[in-house]
Length: 150
Image 1 (spheres, rainbow, N blue to C red):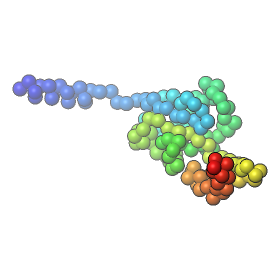
Image 2: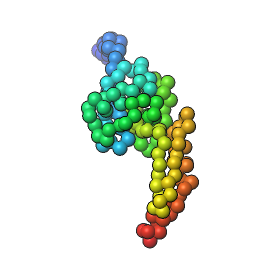
Image 3: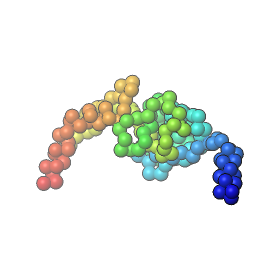
Image 4: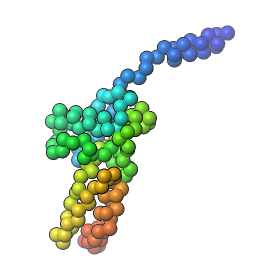
C-alpha cells in the first residue's frame, strides 16, 4: 500500500515538473581557451546557437577578435575532433549534447617550410573533413617535419 502511494506521488511530481524553457550550452570557439556560455531556448536551431554564441563572444570582448560578423562563415561541431558539422536546421533539444565547438569555414592558407602555400577554399556545404582532405593531399610538410625529428 505504501509503495503504491509513493509511486503515485512520484508520477504526480513528474507530471507537475515545469517544461524546460532555457538551455545552458557551452560553445568553444576556435582558437579560444574558455567556452562561451549561452542561454537559449530548446526550440532554437543550430543556426540560432551559432549567432548567439558569436554575439556573446564579441559582447564579452574575447580574444582573438573574430573579424567576421556573418554567422554563415562558421560551422558547429560536437567537438573539435568531430569532422562532421551539424545541420543549421536541427533543433537544439534533439542534439543530445550541451557542449559544442564552433569553427570557421572560411578559406585557410597553410604554408609549408619551403614557402609554398596551399589554400583550402570552402564550398557551399563545407565541412572540416573536406578541408582536412585537401590539406592531407599536400603531406610534404608532415614528411619534412618527420625527417627533422629523425
